[in-house]
Image (cartoon, rainbow, N blue to C red):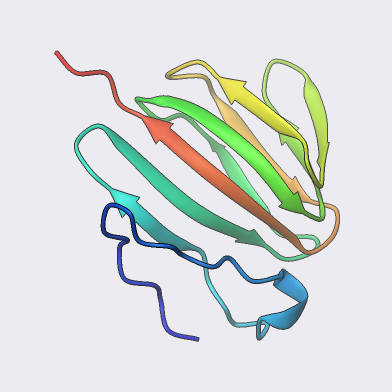
Length: 110
């Protein structure tokens, strides 16, 4: 599957079920501006994103699957769960099963 082009304002983007995607399908940036970034994050069962921090405020909406968000506490996110992290908060992700998330990063403007 080819990476999605960044969405234009008002453009509808379909985020398919992870089960319908080939195993080699990668995470896709949906939109990236100076104020925010939206990413369709795909994590296959057993995969891990190592501890890191980003400059912006983060929201994670679990669309399907189950992941462990390692932050202040370990939080299990399942389909429909949403969480917010403060800017610069160190975190990691571990997929308990094939999972799809909508990641949004909001950048503060000077």
